[in-house]
Length: 119
Image (cartoon, rainbow, N blue to C red):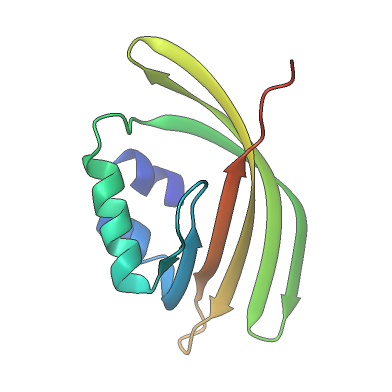
């Protein structure tokens, strides 16, 4: 769901996955606080011509649920072709979901960063 929305550059579909009090912490950027700011962040990201479709595999290494909060960590990797050059990337993330009144789960906190390639 998330990857499909990213690759379609669908800011509305992406932000629908977030809680109204979400905090997004992208790599090397200031925190993005609140749903309106998260929406603007994705609109700006998707308007960038350098943002192109990519593949992604998530390898979840921990998942915990306590009451209405779920916490997960993963290592991810994928590929993107930019300017005719294929680029492999790898990273890590921390996701915190919050259970909503209707029983659904939405992203409450999301932080990610790249893992540098081994030399």
